[in-house]
Length: 447
Ligand code: GLY
Ligand code: MN
Ligand code: MN
Image (cartoon, rainbow, N blue to C red):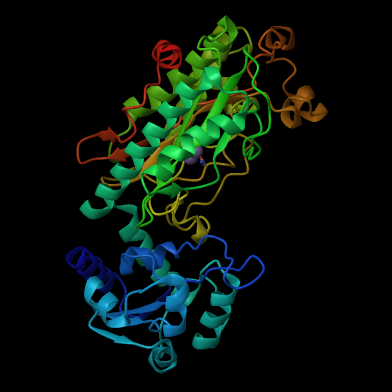
């Protein structure tokens, strides 16, 4: 670990001459101090400190690492047992020096930082640096330097990301196998998350496990399962060191897709497969999104749901009636990696988000590069806020066959999501061990 952390610091020093201070953040209490929400260290801190320390800061300057953390309060041993001392932590992460937190005030001159999410620590950051934090000047330069590093995963990161992906695959297999005997979404969620917990990992984000996949961020698990339902499960793991995976599968609770479900499933899968087949270094991610849109449009035309020429349908954003989000995003220490930096990480310098209906939710608009990890997650959803909107219905009345669409009412939401690493010559799908083919998924459920 020491070696990789040193390499990351040296790489940062090449890109950023300013001293850098990164805070880890602290836990937030639910009511009394010892009853806390789970602590998650800031990802930028994790990248350079390597371990999830709490209430700590690191200073990075020309490749040197200084750690600022208080020794544990001896009176807390009663509650927490023995916890490592500052000197032990400093040795573990290869720090050149280590100080109590009170010393930090003497080391902040000319330093840049990245704001953390928890408000108490953010306040400390502003006080120490004597300014409000915005992405301008040295903070913008630092953010750009960190983005350059974190866009390309090093060997240690990839090892963690692969562990995370393999546990998420096992969680999805457990969810599929639990389906036929489960009565509620909550029972399937429990089967999936228990695999993640049993591997001493956590969920990388709030799981979506629902028969209402058309509600894109559905975080309720109380629906009873009906035999004709499709279940959409978007569940990912996070390793102890913070690295994430992000997988979605959609499967029939009964173990058999209805003909209409199968038709749409195969359209989404065709989009998924076409995107993955096209990915390699140099390809624009936006083109991958547009390819998914086109394959979706073609498939929906062949099913009679859309009518017209697929390219023209994509130009008028008709695909977005059913596929309203982007094809995916960066993945790394965060499930939407570095989105705390707004679009700075997702969008190549000089590019901004489109306000087109079919492109506005595209979270990544960069050429693919070796060692980048992204998701590919096309979907089909019947969202009433879109399909029931009178203005939208008027605008698209001539390209949607509403009668035909009504035959597909047992398809509320389908998404298929995999994690794709760009390599020097092509790609590696880190989540490939989890089948996507409908027949194969049916077999696993019925097994
Ligand atoms: N799990 C969040 C996403 O797929 O973007
Ligand atoms: Mn995703
Ligand atoms: Mn997901």
